Image 1 (cartoon, rainbow, N blue to C red):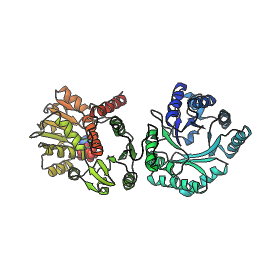
Image 2: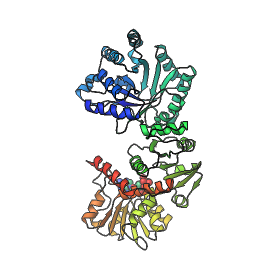
Image 3: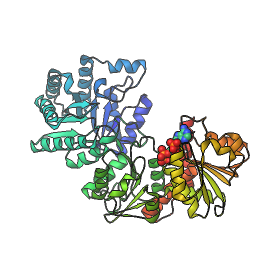
Image 4: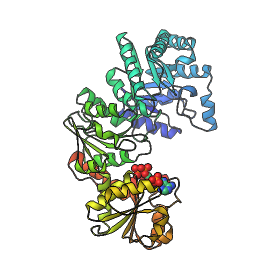
Length: 522
Ligand code: ATR
């Protein structure tokens, strides 16, 4: 059973969210602690009208056990609801026909008993979930079992245990706890919160967790790490290998799922870009970001779950190479992989970073026979220099730290200049590969305006902001400019080509990412 939390702030939004969820989820969880002045009986009635089959969970979480808090005076009142007020709310929910009431172990076994006998007395079929959350960590398995027993001993119909995962090993503990509960014939809902806990959300359901929580389309997440309902459904089918007919789901044979491996990944725009493209290409599947701390386990997951492809980002682009079966010539030369293709269980590594940069640059200028200053000496500089040489041009490395710049220049047999001498260089183009000028430091640039006039084209690999200070200065000097967005979408399109063999909808991807960035900027 997949459940979507409903926690919208206004009444209108709440009703809209319930209607939306009723179409795609098996259950909704009414987070009464996050709603402003809602009438639980009325919400249950609306949900019942929308769908007779929809299961309804009512909860009123204590702020100590929730990672989501809202500001505002009414919210403050809600968050400090007394135990008596909560009990009154739960009694209303039982009378209104809630399928489940989720009450925290911390409310005390007396309160739990009280609500159970109220249900019995009123012949309510409401089942009681007794829950426990830790928003900071995952305790040992021994401790988790003790907590499980404490919840079970209150007479809970279902026990819910949700700690916060700090490492991927925490997920294993929670999965073992599910086995433990199931061996005793008990119903349990268990998973880990947090980015590190994402994998438990996928695996817990197939392990026997009674409910999995996901975010509805355009909805709000009630805990970090929640997957969308679409992703959750697809992973379930992948794991269970059974076909469902509803049109938002795909069979395991059809589904082509992709992941991003990095740390951190929270800010990444790749899921937005790739999911938009997959939908437009009518490819059944989705793309999800995973914050990884154990790279070997993540790669095993790609093999084990038949994930068709992956993007690899900071800090794993080099480290990932040792786990792959084959690496293409360009990625080997660059010493970095940003794309994995799973071909029937064999993992192939590629690099599309340099491809994206060169495709975007070639659209604007000739490269062969021309010189381009590459600002920086990290991975992005290496990709730029590599691409320029491949296209018959000549890089000139300019870097703050002499040793790093010289080493890169030596590798590519090209000139090096310290940053202080940037004003003296003349070349066809300038490519900034450093992070200087990136949000939030949007008024920084390594190249003084006087030095920029020397170039016909100025390129910045940064895409947030859409136009960096370097590009604004270059535009003011009459140079052609090329923004990082152009490279970002092209490297993404090249990944999709490798994964699916098909051309990606570049303009749509660009429009989607640009709109999101404009929203962030405004
Ligand atoms: P990536 O792999 O994404 O290119 P990186 O390896 O961290 O990232 O490289 C970043 C580059 O940006 C480096 O060349 C760095 O210069 P140093 O070699 O001197 O460290 C350059 N860089 C980052 N911040 C900088 C700053 N404030 N001023 C000048 N150069 C900077």
